[in-house]
Image (tube, rainbow, N blue to C red; front, side, top):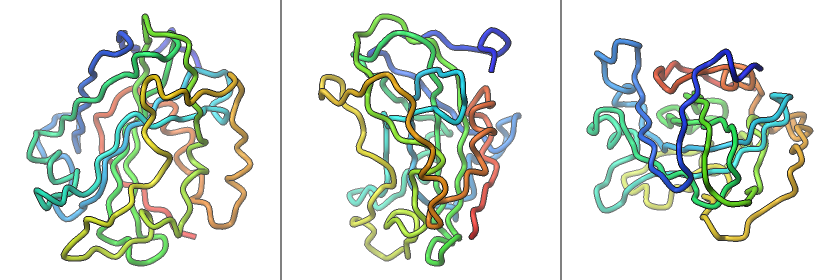
Length: 216
């Protein structure tokens, strides 16, 4: 894809970025239906020439807040659809995609009932260091029976496990060689289908929370 033909935000490593979710472009509706509760996740991936080779490392996650007894999506609605995330201070400068993702669990008690709302924005990171965090393929990393994907909500959801790898922490030493991650895991019969691979890579903003439902 051509980075020169699309909008790119310039951000300094270590700075905060505010992401905003809207259900439509006018922003005159709630972020997501109140019944669609679940976690919020944000990933980054360095620019590569082949969109299938993007290697995603997680920079933010929020699931169920047991003290407030609220899911991230509920807090997001109350906050007007915005959340602040920090760009890791030690990553290499350059072009990245930022993938923001909401996961709705209202139908997740059955396999294939979980709903995903991914969108991407392009950023150019300045400053920083030399870290290349180890990433995972998306789609391809989540499994249909992961405890955070196949999940029956309870009165107490404090044991909910957020899907995906751990959040990368600057200075944690989690580095990998600058090589693409194999996308072979998408062939696993238990892997969530790669129906959003192109749509996420081609997105320019996080403005829409359009539904994507995955089934076998």
